[in-house]
Length: 295
Ligand code: ZN
Image 1: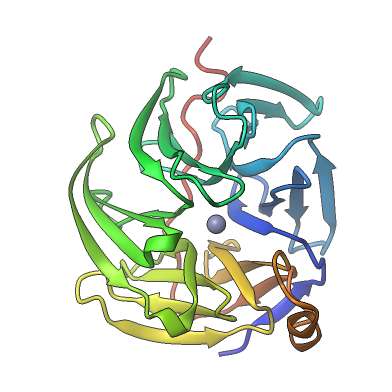
Image 2: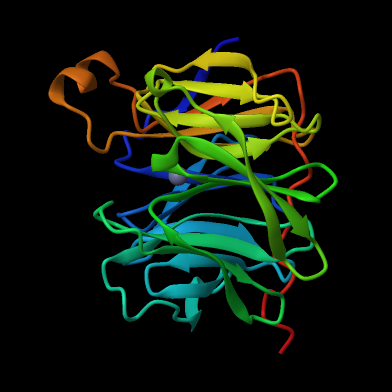
């Protein structure tokens, strides 16, 4: 299975791909640049909006807007007017923190985690933004909040705090967004790299991007076994998301951050957007249920 280069962007920190099914486009971010990227696979057109502050992740919302996890908090971005409205500032007491990965749960809540941008302190938290715009913390004491996903039945939540090299599984209470019974699902061997972003396919298997590992991997979360490895010509593989009308394209983001001159020579395409045809489909993407917050 080959990874096809779609956009040679050489981004410092390409991340957070999400399929915007309503418009048939892929959205992703370049975190520190605050870049909101859009790729339309039908036309091949790629565009960027710069938001003026770090952007960890985003989700399309049911009202047609995008909900962003900016450094200063959750915000609503209106695509037609290109206006931004921050509505929840969560960590004004932690100026070194920023948002990292995030995704909607099967009920349409937006879960997004924060981290110390210097990657030193365990000051990160995983938050859940409900449809009514109320926010609560689900996990605290995190170092690099990453890799969110749910089992096809929505009852199991998968989460990665990258330095642990473990994909954790939790029972997920879909009614109340509560986590219980944490247990390790997959342990990533040291020589494979660091687990970063993740997606779950229609068979319930986990696709885990490996930072520093130049590969995407597929794992069985029940047995913890490695099922498949897809090499990429980019060193830091950051995240992946299924897209396309049939959800059979797997888009992969990558990054150049932290690479040595030698590594950049060996992996010149690092920071690009790639696509894989894995022969399995993704779960239907979920939009944020709130949008304008019902107001
Ligand atoms: Zn990540």
